Image 1 (cartoon, rainbow, N blue to C red):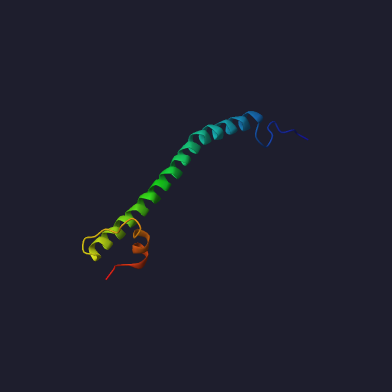
Image 2 (tube, rainbow, N blue to C red):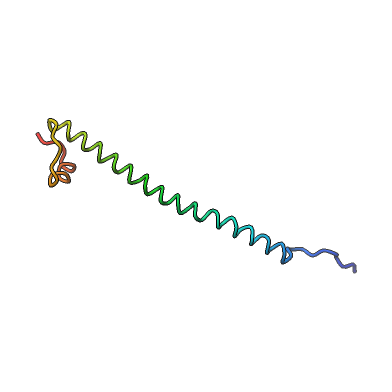
Length: 83
């Protein structure tokens, strides 16, 4: 029988190089992912503020140029225009 001069599989050096490359890539990607989460939360907050601005504009138009008082705001947004 004749022995093969090469074996199937990976050498230890090849595996170590692969692990090093993956760790370098992950050290770059993980901080960027954290920044993306922060930016997503900021965008969500900006969207909510835009909705509030629109609701206040509608309230202002429906109530003859009056903005709601501090205590009236939550009930004004829930109940609609005052007639």
